[in-house]
Image (cartoon, rainbow, N blue to C red; front, side, top):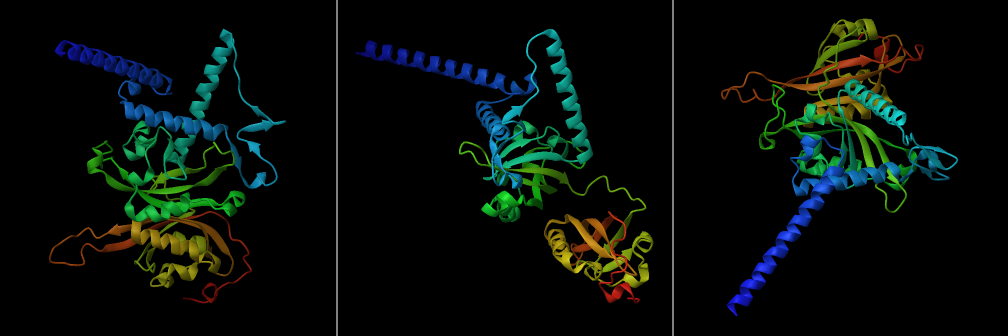
Length: 374
């Protein structure tokens, strides 16, 4: 009896070893199919292989699926360039010359993509409607300290600030009206960053919050097996390319957005002197129809410390308006002391405002502030 029991155990152990061996071979084969460098594949564990494989399958489905957009209200168009109902693709078949041409094409495409990402000063992110990170561009590690493979397949809610979850859900939600209106997404969220002040990657347990300005559109797939998602460009704030020029001015504000300082470029660009603006609210100079844009920017500043306003109209002395965009940040009080209870309060709001247009409708006066001294 004992010999039979030992024999069964030995057979069971051998069967288990065989299953583990087959399982490992399957995972190795699956890992080799992933479009990753060998050095990256060597360090993937089994859950990571599954997670990345699912992400790439969903991305492939997304790129080859059928979508609904504003221009497709009466018919469906296959993703990509379509000619007479057929996908137009770059195909290279056989021959040494074709291989060289394919390599050259891939190199040029990669170089072009890297150029776009450098100009963007941010990274690309594709989110499913449930918040899964289907894809991130490789340069995400430059801004977040976490690699592409560490993030892909995870849910954005695991890395975003809990106070931003409701706003994030609202942006991920796609209504029937938005399918055809092509409504843009423009929001600010806080996400975990493993980058230290010196630009090195640290442990995620000691991660800090980085503010991202996210812009993009929803992509709604009409086929049952396809994936609906959000395509976003993410720029960490504050932006490093805020270089001052003749079409830019800086200003400081109290927390209720009243001017406490403004440089001389304001006079050259909008006609207002520094003295007449002190104590006045920036809302007084904003076009009435754009106050919601400023209110949203003000809200983000109060809760997230950094924000980009988006384009809005600012009134010009004498009449008319110009289109501007403000990049803003809350400056904390640098003097912390236990004996001063207000020392940890925000010191001011710093704004860098870009003038994006010339004066439009110069004969139109929308406010008395444009004609008389404030």
